[in-house]
Amino acid sequence: MLPGPGLSEDEVERDQHDAVLRLADATGAVVLSGGEVSYAVSSGRGAWRGSGGAAGLATAGSGAVKAGVVAGLLARGASPEQAVVWGSWAHTSAGALLAAESPGFLARDVMRLVPRRLAAVDASTSRRPAGTTRGRAPEGVRH
Figure 1 (cartoon, rainbow, N blue to C red):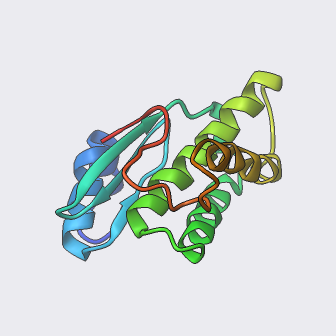
Figure 2: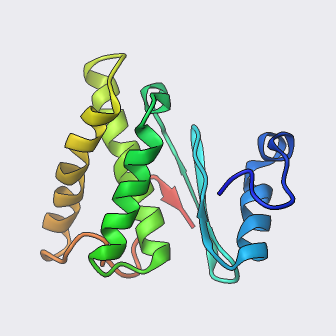
């Protein structure tokens, strides 16, 4: 959705958090940004900041993988806020693991690793389906 209605690319690059917040307020949607630091913002419900994105996540198709993870979590019953926070975390976490193995990777490599990252969370949360972990933010994500 970025840069979005009324936002220029320059505004987004200057203050990504403010741009995402303004877009969420203007649309009423839960908005997820990308980049080395990403923001998930829900108008009136909160904002989350995640960091640690590997440079390899800038590869073509990686954003589509993140969007697909979010859509999959929504389909499994996650709230929009949960889906964007956990989807972004799973994407970033997979990228970090891949970067530790090799400096370069493809979006399909990220896609293959995301289910394992979510399964690790499932195993640590009493076997709840991915995306339904209530009241908990992923490691490395601040509210």
